[in-house]
Image 1 (tube, one colour):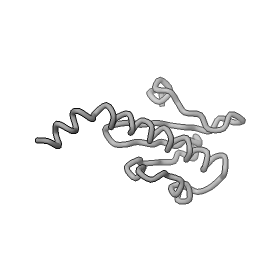
Image 2 (tube, helix red, strand yellow):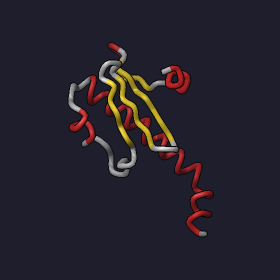
Image 3 (cartoon, rainbow, N blue to C red):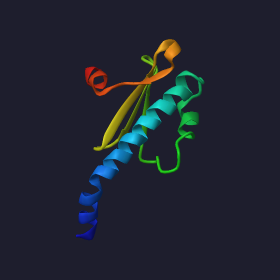
Image 4 (cartoon, one colour):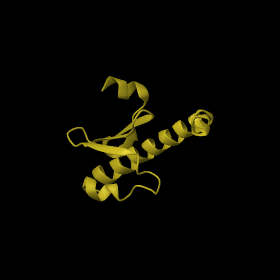
Length: 96
């Protein structure tokens, strides 16, 4: 019962932290893959402590990285020429 109350009370904070984690994960991994040219296994080592729950996937054809925390947050970053890696907004993600 106490855990359920804590979860309800903390939900916005948990969701906010998940959004920050996926945004950071997508951007940093996109830079690792498509600016530095490293492989995904190497890029996984760039995750900060506490980001173990952030799942990353690679779309090499479109030079995109997808990051998610299941049921809480998702983010996508893609390489855009000289601009480097750019975070997609929700409308761009929905259009994929």
